Length: 360
Image (cartoon, rainbow, N blue to C red):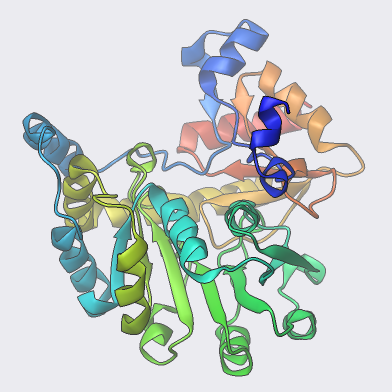
């Protein structure tokens, strides 16, 4: 028996998660000065973290020999105030929202269960579900990437446990209308997971529906609006009955001390939040109006560009040679070969990426 056969066959068949390219790898491959490269491929906050968060990390660095609180209670309480939702409906999670997805799948999925994923969308839903024994039903989206609720309902079977929705969707940036979410919550006996990683940049959230429906879970992250991607901090908003069960299987101390402290500080920095939102709204409008290809409307801190009849790989390669990192969306199931996701950057970065597109 080969060593590889020690790994479950279903796990071996899961496609790898494809991250955005790094500055370091790009500099090595193309012989560029790292300081000359702009990274607009991973939807990070170009403003960086709140200065309050950085100071909280410094102030608590000498305490990292101690375990944090097991339930991240200090952070949960801060989130409760931020969201105006009871702490009994909130779980802080690490690493990032991915940790929330992993633990939910471990809690809910049994061998042979199914989940539904409208595509194209964030690939980790598929990875987390399949790693825990579920099969995935993929439902294609309508024109302009609108979720096809009728097709989702037709795809539901007696084995369907979870419907995944991303709002704003990654990589298209569109919101799932609240009436569509309500329809699924009311017609589907399983759980509906709504990923709101980018919702602070949008005009509407469905977190309030958690208090109305006992089968809704909303996932959030500190990686985007709060600029803490490197600390891998997320949280879930869920019915209190589910939180009780969730905490039984959550890994011990899954939110690090420094992430907890930085998260609390970030929530308190309203000026940084407002500045980040303003930058995203202004920047995506600039990119939509000036990139010389079709650019979809977006409610996130990125825009989706269709470079057809050219290929995404060709255009991305050209941009990389110019020191501009964007995201080739071919790794998103169902996205085709001509879509590129561009993160909103600073004003200077946005000007540069537009110029790079124009000269491809």
